[in-house]
Image (cartoon, rainbow, N blue to C red; front, side, top):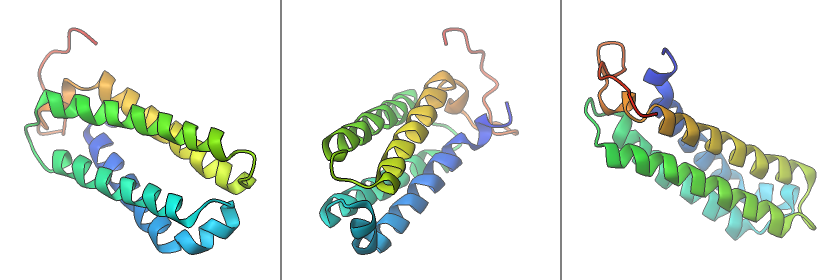
Length: 138
C-alpha cells in the first residue's frame, strides 16, 4: 500500500526529470544516440507536458476517475510510441539510445499498469495518501 500514495509523485517527477535532461542535452544525446535532435527535443517536450498533467493530479486530494484512467492510458500509448521509435530507428541508433528508449517504454508501461490497477485507490488521497474506498473491480 505504501507505493500507492507515491505513484503519482513518482510519475510526475520521473517525467519532469527525464524531460529536462533530454531537452538540455538533446544536441549531445543526438550524437551519442545517433538520433535526430528534433526527435529528442520532441521526447523531452512530451515528458514535460506529461509531468505537468501528472503533477496536476498529484497535488489534489480528490481526483476524477476519468483523469486517472487517462493518465494510465497515456502511459500505455507513450510506451507504444517509444517502441515505435525504437523499431523505426533501431538500424541506425546506438546501444545507449536503444536502451534509453526501451527503458522509457518499460518504465512508463509499468507505471501505467500500476495506475490502472490502483485507479480507485488514487481517487482520494487519504491520511496515508490512499483512498479508504473499497476496490471491487480491479
